[in-house]
Image (cartoon, rainbow, N blue to C red; front, side, top):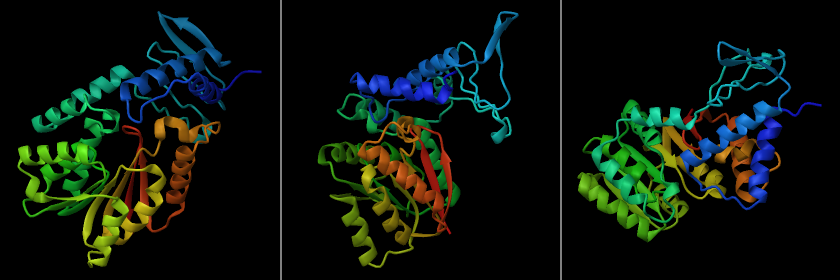
Length: 302
Protein backbone atom coordinates (compact mmCIF):
# COMPACT_ATOMS: atom_id res chain seq x y z
CA UNK A 1 0.00 0.00 0.00
CA UNK A 2 1.46 3.36 -1.06
CA UNK A 3 2.22 5.96 1.61
CA UNK A 4 0.53 9.32 0.94
CA UNK A 5 2.69 12.42 0.50
CA UNK A 6 1.02 14.25 3.37
CA UNK A 7 1.60 11.34 5.73
CA UNK A 8 5.27 11.28 4.76
CA UNK A 9 5.52 14.99 5.59
CA UNK A 10 3.89 14.34 8.95
CA UNK A 11 6.30 11.52 9.67
CA UNK A 12 9.30 13.64 8.67
CA UNK A 13 8.27 16.30 11.17
CA UNK A 14 7.45 13.85 13.93
CA UNK A 15 10.71 11.95 13.47
CA UNK A 16 12.76 15.13 13.80
CA UNK A 17 10.72 16.33 16.77
CA UNK A 18 11.08 12.94 18.46
CA UNK A 19 14.84 13.17 18.07
CA UNK A 20 14.90 16.51 19.80
CA UNK A 21 15.24 18.76 16.76
CA UNK A 22 13.64 22.05 17.81
CA UNK A 23 12.71 24.53 15.10
CA UNK A 24 12.80 28.24 16.01
CA UNK A 25 9.54 30.15 15.93
CA UNK A 26 10.61 31.94 12.77
CA UNK A 27 13.50 30.63 10.70
CA UNK A 28 12.49 30.83 7.03
CA UNK A 29 15.67 29.31 5.61
CA UNK A 30 15.61 26.36 8.00
CA UNK A 31 11.92 25.71 7.54
CA UNK A 32 12.09 25.94 3.76
CA UNK A 33 14.96 23.49 3.66
CA UNK A 34 13.00 21.15 5.93
CA UNK A 35 9.95 21.25 3.69
CA UNK A 36 12.07 20.78 0.57
CA UNK A 37 13.67 17.66 2.07
CA UNK A 38 10.30 16.31 3.16
CA UNK A 39 8.77 17.03 -0.23
CA UNK A 40 11.60 15.09 -1.84
CA UNK A 41 11.02 12.17 0.54
CA UNK A 42 7.32 12.33 -0.25
CA UNK A 43 8.11 12.02 -3.92
CA UNK A 44 10.22 8.92 -3.35
CA UNK A 45 7.51 7.36 -1.21
CA UNK A 46 4.62 8.02 -3.59
CA UNK A 47 3.33 5.42 -6.01
CA UNK A 48 3.30 7.86 -8.89
CA UNK A 49 5.35 6.63 -11.81
CA UNK A 50 8.19 8.92 -12.85
CA UNK A 51 9.87 8.77 -16.23
CA UNK A 52 12.83 10.57 -17.72
CA UNK A 53 12.38 12.67 -20.83
CA UNK A 54 15.03 14.91 -22.32
CA UNK A 55 16.85 14.91 -18.98
CA UNK A 56 13.81 16.22 -17.06
CA UNK A 57 11.83 14.03 -14.69
CA UNK A 58 8.07 14.11 -15.06
CA UNK A 59 5.27 12.44 -13.11
CA UNK A 60 2.44 10.38 -14.52
CA UNK A 61 -0.09 10.63 -11.71
CA UNK A 62 -3.42 9.06 -11.06
CA UNK A 63 -6.10 11.78 -11.30
CA UNK A 64 -7.49 11.58 -7.76
CA UNK A 65 -4.20 11.70 -5.85
CA UNK A 66 -2.30 14.55 -4.23
CA UNK A 67 1.02 14.54 -6.09
CA UNK A 68 4.33 16.30 -5.77
CA UNK A 69 6.58 17.22 -8.64
CA UNK A 70 9.77 15.31 -9.17
CA UNK A 71 11.89 18.35 -9.96
CA UNK A 72 15.24 18.70 -8.24
CA UNK A 73 13.91 21.78 -6.43
CA UNK A 74 11.12 19.77 -4.80
CA UNK A 75 8.32 22.15 -5.62
CA UNK A 76 5.07 21.04 -4.06
CA UNK A 77 2.30 20.86 -6.62
CA UNK A 78 -1.33 20.06 -5.87
CA UNK A 79 -3.04 18.18 -8.68
CA UNK A 80 -6.24 16.91 -7.17
CA UNK A 81 -9.66 17.01 -8.80
CA UNK A 82 -11.32 18.39 -5.68
CA UNK A 83 -9.10 21.49 -6.05
CA UNK A 84 -9.79 21.75 -9.76
CA UNK A 85 -6.31 20.37 -10.53
CA UNK A 86 -4.85 23.72 -9.46
CA UNK A 87 -1.07 23.71 -9.35
CA UNK A 88 0.24 25.33 -6.17
CA UNK A 89 3.99 25.80 -5.94
CA UNK A 90 5.74 25.94 -2.58
CA UNK A 91 8.51 28.39 -1.72
CA UNK A 92 11.94 26.79 -1.89
CA UNK A 93 15.08 28.44 -0.46
CA UNK A 94 16.19 29.68 -3.88
CA UNK A 95 12.74 31.07 -4.65
CA UNK A 96 12.58 32.73 -1.24
CA UNK A 97 15.93 34.38 -1.93
CA UNK A 98 14.41 35.71 -5.14
CA UNK A 99 11.36 37.03 -3.25
CA UNK A 100 13.57 38.84 -0.71
CA UNK A 101 15.63 40.30 -3.54
CA UNK A 102 12.43 41.95 -4.74
CA UNK A 103 11.48 43.49 -1.39
CA UNK A 104 11.89 47.25 -1.03
CA UNK A 105 13.43 47.37 2.42
CA UNK A 106 14.26 50.85 3.74
CA UNK A 107 17.84 51.22 4.98
CA UNK A 108 16.75 51.88 8.57
CA UNK A 109 14.80 48.60 8.58
CA UNK A 110 17.80 46.73 7.21
CA UNK A 111 19.94 48.12 10.03
CA UNK A 112 17.38 47.07 12.64
CA UNK A 113 17.06 43.61 11.12
CA UNK A 114 20.81 43.08 11.17
CA UNK A 115 21.15 44.26 14.76
CA UNK A 116 18.28 42.01 15.84
CA UNK A 117 19.91 39.01 14.14
CA UNK A 118 22.56 38.95 16.86
CA UNK A 119 20.02 39.00 19.68
CA UNK A 120 18.40 36.17 21.61
CA UNK A 121 15.05 35.31 20.05
CA UNK A 122 15.88 36.93 16.70
CA UNK A 123 13.65 34.37 14.95
CA UNK A 124 10.65 36.25 16.38
CA UNK A 125 11.24 39.16 14.01
CA UNK A 126 8.89 39.28 11.02
CA UNK A 127 10.48 38.77 7.62
CA UNK A 128 11.06 41.68 5.20
CA UNK A 129 8.33 40.47 2.84
CA UNK A 130 5.85 40.34 5.73
CA UNK A 131 6.75 43.84 6.85
CA UNK A 132 6.35 45.14 3.31
CA UNK A 133 2.86 43.60 3.10
CA UNK A 134 1.83 45.12 6.44
CA UNK A 135 3.03 48.56 5.36
CA UNK A 136 1.15 48.26 2.06
CA UNK A 137 -2.08 47.29 3.85
CA UNK A 138 -1.75 50.37 6.05
CA UNK A 139 -1.21 52.53 2.97
CA UNK A 140 -4.15 51.00 1.07
CA UNK A 141 -6.40 51.66 4.07
CA UNK A 142 -4.99 55.19 4.39
CA UNK A 143 -4.81 54.27 8.05
CA UNK A 144 -4.04 56.92 10.66
CA UNK A 145 -4.54 54.93 13.86
CA UNK A 146 -2.90 51.53 14.29
CA UNK A 147 -2.18 49.01 17.04
CA UNK A 148 0.55 46.40 17.31
CA UNK A 149 0.33 43.62 19.88
CA UNK A 150 3.84 42.22 20.34
CA UNK A 151 6.60 44.57 19.22
CA UNK A 152 9.82 42.66 19.99
CA UNK A 153 12.61 44.93 18.60
CA UNK A 154 10.22 46.91 16.44
CA UNK A 155 10.78 45.78 12.85
CA UNK A 156 7.09 45.51 11.91
CA UNK A 157 6.03 48.53 13.98
CA UNK A 158 8.76 50.64 12.40
CA UNK A 159 7.64 49.54 8.93
CA UNK A 160 4.12 50.69 9.82
CA UNK A 161 5.20 53.94 11.45
CA UNK A 162 7.27 54.87 8.40
CA UNK A 163 4.19 54.90 6.16
CA UNK A 164 1.81 56.57 8.62
CA UNK A 165 1.05 60.25 8.00
CA UNK A 166 2.69 62.77 10.33
CA UNK A 167 -0.52 62.95 12.34
CA UNK A 168 -0.74 59.17 12.56
CA UNK A 169 -0.57 57.14 15.76
CA UNK A 170 0.66 53.61 16.43
CA UNK A 171 -0.04 52.04 19.82
CA UNK A 172 2.83 49.57 20.32
CA UNK A 173 2.31 46.97 23.08
CA UNK A 174 5.30 45.01 24.39
CA UNK A 175 6.11 43.40 27.74
CA UNK A 176 9.86 42.78 27.25
CA UNK A 177 11.80 45.86 28.36
CA UNK A 178 15.12 44.91 26.75
CA UNK A 179 13.76 44.39 23.24
CA UNK A 180 11.55 47.46 23.59
CA UNK A 181 14.62 49.62 24.20
CA UNK A 182 15.98 48.54 20.81
CA UNK A 183 12.66 49.39 19.19
CA UNK A 184 12.58 52.85 20.76
CA UNK A 185 16.13 53.51 19.62
CA UNK A 186 15.14 52.86 16.02
CA UNK A 187 11.91 54.85 16.27
CA UNK A 188 14.14 57.76 17.26
CA UNK A 189 16.68 57.15 14.49
CA UNK A 190 13.95 56.93 11.88
CA UNK A 191 12.31 60.14 13.08
CA UNK A 192 8.95 58.48 13.80
CA UNK A 193 8.94 58.38 17.62
CA UNK A 194 6.25 61.07 17.69
CA UNK A 195 3.92 58.65 15.89
CA UNK A 196 4.44 55.77 18.35
CA UNK A 197 2.65 55.41 21.67
CA UNK A 198 4.63 52.72 23.51
CA UNK A 199 2.67 50.62 26.00
CA UNK A 200 5.04 48.62 28.22
CA UNK A 201 3.33 45.74 30.00
CA UNK A 202 0.62 43.20 29.25
CA UNK A 203 -1.04 43.90 25.91
CA UNK A 204 -4.48 42.78 27.09
CA UNK A 205 -4.38 45.40 29.85
CA UNK A 206 -3.35 48.10 27.38
CA UNK A 207 -6.19 47.19 24.99
CA UNK A 208 -8.76 47.16 27.79
CA UNK A 209 -7.51 50.57 28.91
CA UNK A 210 -8.03 51.98 25.41
CA UNK A 211 -11.61 50.68 25.41
CA UNK A 212 -12.30 52.22 28.84
CA UNK A 213 -10.95 55.55 27.58
CA UNK A 214 -13.60 55.59 24.86
CA UNK A 215 -11.37 54.66 21.91
CA UNK A 216 -13.60 51.83 20.65
CA UNK A 217 -14.07 51.69 16.87
CA UNK A 218 -11.42 54.40 16.37
CA UNK A 219 -8.53 52.35 14.96
CA UNK A 220 -7.98 51.44 11.30
CA UNK A 221 -5.46 48.62 11.57
CA UNK A 222 -4.06 46.12 14.08
CA UNK A 223 -1.29 43.53 13.93
CA UNK A 224 -1.03 40.66 16.42
CA UNK A 225 2.28 38.86 16.94
CA UNK A 226 2.41 37.91 20.60
CA UNK A 227 1.56 35.01 22.92
CA UNK A 228 -0.30 32.54 20.69
CA UNK A 229 -2.53 31.18 23.43
CA UNK A 230 -3.87 34.72 23.88
CA UNK A 231 -4.87 35.19 20.23
CA UNK A 232 -8.60 34.80 20.85
CA UNK A 233 -8.59 37.33 23.69
CA UNK A 234 -6.53 39.83 21.68
CA UNK A 235 -8.84 39.37 18.73
CA UNK A 236 -12.00 40.03 20.77
CA UNK A 237 -10.52 43.19 22.27
CA UNK A 238 -9.29 44.44 18.89
CA UNK A 239 -12.69 43.84 17.34
CA UNK A 240 -13.98 46.44 19.78
CA UNK A 241 -11.18 48.88 18.96
CA UNK A 242 -11.05 48.58 15.15
CA UNK A 243 -13.64 50.37 13.02
CA UNK A 244 -15.91 48.66 10.50
CA UNK A 245 -13.85 48.12 7.36
CA UNK A 246 -10.61 48.13 9.34
CA UNK A 247 -8.12 45.26 9.38
CA UNK A 248 -6.78 42.91 12.05
CA UNK A 249 -3.78 40.82 10.93
CA UNK A 250 -2.68 37.81 12.96
CA UNK A 251 0.78 36.27 12.53
CA UNK A 252 1.97 32.63 12.84
CA UNK A 253 -1.35 31.07 11.86
CA UNK A 254 0.44 28.19 10.08
CA UNK A 255 2.88 27.60 12.97
CA UNK A 256 5.63 25.97 10.87
CA UNK A 257 3.00 23.71 9.29
CA UNK A 258 2.22 22.01 12.59
CA UNK A 259 -1.43 23.12 12.50
CA UNK A 260 -1.99 20.73 9.58
CA UNK A 261 -0.28 17.81 11.32
CA UNK A 262 -2.83 15.79 13.29
CA UNK A 263 0.00 14.07 15.16
CA UNK A 264 1.14 17.38 16.72
CA UNK A 265 -1.06 18.38 19.66
CA UNK A 266 0.99 20.55 22.01
CA UNK A 267 -0.81 23.40 23.75
CA UNK A 268 0.29 26.19 21.40
CA UNK A 269 -0.40 24.24 18.22
CA UNK A 270 -3.87 23.23 19.39
CA UNK A 271 -4.55 26.82 20.47
CA UNK A 272 -3.63 28.20 17.04
CA UNK A 273 -5.56 25.44 15.27
CA UNK A 274 -8.67 26.21 17.34
CA UNK A 275 -8.26 29.94 16.78
CA UNK A 276 -8.04 29.42 13.01
CA UNK A 277 -11.24 27.37 13.13
CA UNK A 278 -13.00 30.11 15.10
CA UNK A 279 -11.92 32.73 12.56
CA UNK A 280 -13.23 30.60 9.72
CA UNK A 281 -16.65 30.47 11.38
CA UNK A 282 -16.70 34.10 12.59
CA UNK A 283 -19.20 36.06 10.50
CA UNK A 284 -18.09 39.36 12.06
CA UNK A 285 -15.06 39.44 9.76
CA UNK A 286 -14.00 38.67 6.22
CA UNK A 287 -10.81 36.62 6.22
CA UNK A 288 -7.89 35.62 4.02
CA UNK A 289 -5.15 33.26 5.22
CA UNK A 290 -1.93 34.17 3.44
CA UNK A 291 1.05 31.73 3.31
CA UNK A 292 3.70 34.39 3.83
CA UNK A 293 6.35 34.03 6.51
CA UNK A 294 4.84 31.67 9.09
CA UNK A 295 1.36 32.41 7.79
CA UNK A 296 -0.80 35.48 8.38
CA UNK A 297 -4.57 35.83 8.42
CA UNK A 298 -5.96 39.17 7.31
CA UNK A 299 -9.36 39.95 8.86
CA UNK A 300 -11.61 42.82 7.80
CA UNK A 301 -14.26 43.86 10.31
CA UNK A 302 -17.74 43.76 8.81
